Image (cartoon, rainbow, N blue to C red):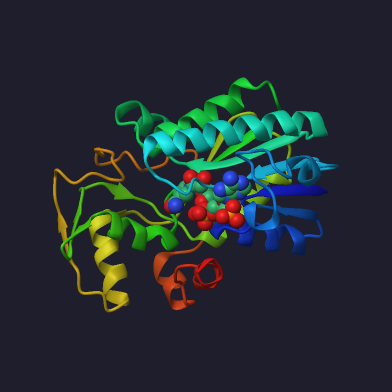
Length: 261
Ligand SMILES: NC(=O)c1ccc[n+]([C@@H]2O[C@H](COP(=O)([O-])OP(=O)(O)OC[C@H]3O[C@@H](n4cnc5c(N)ncnc54)[C@H](OP(=O)(O)O)[C@@H]3O)[C@@H](O)[C@H]2O)c1
């Protein structure tokens, strides 16, 4: 099957492309690095020609609401429009568990993701939206976002993170299946308090930042309730535990970071 992966050079994209290619699919890697810009439309005609399925694992360069909204709205509209013209039969997008409720209460980046999902649902096109929990590879970003003068302040929220490889497997299985026309949730096998896992993650890297719970701390601009990042009871649970991921050399996508530098 010919599958176009928008954001195919990113953290999830590289893993997804490798997995789909190993399964024998004809994969088109689409991102600005390969001459395809989903926001401006540049290169989309060629990238989507003959594709049965389009998978959107792109991300905004900016996390603030206005910029993220502009990116996800413009880009998704282009992908749906060019996709329809190219005869794409299944539109798959990756988003975050809890997007709707986080967008409703606080907005921010999640409002942009919710707008992306709304456009897909209202497009009349056959689709599947994959909701994943936070990636293990993203824990360092959570620490950095909460850091001020060497102190990391985090809310008391609980989360159920998962490995990027498991996210890629979930997206691949969804993309090669039939459109479900709804959201499907995936999560890791264990729950942690943000503060507990961030502290453990930093210590593993000999990072001595002081990690504290702060009831006023916000999560990427959002005021989290304790269970707001958790999946529903029907979520598919991914196999990789944090300790096993770490033992297997788990780390941020160093190759990707080097390529971007
Ligand atoms: N972080 C988490 O814990 C988490 C949890 C659940 C879901 N998600 C979702 O997962 C998705 C993927 O995240 P990620 O961490 O894999 O992202 P990432 O590593 O930042 O990769 C983003 C990809 O998007 C591409 N891109 C950016 N602007 C583009 C444009 N205008 N046109 C075409 N391609 C463009 C980038 O390539 P170029 O720079 O070459 O264009 C890159 O391939 C996001 O939508 C995010 O909301 C994240």
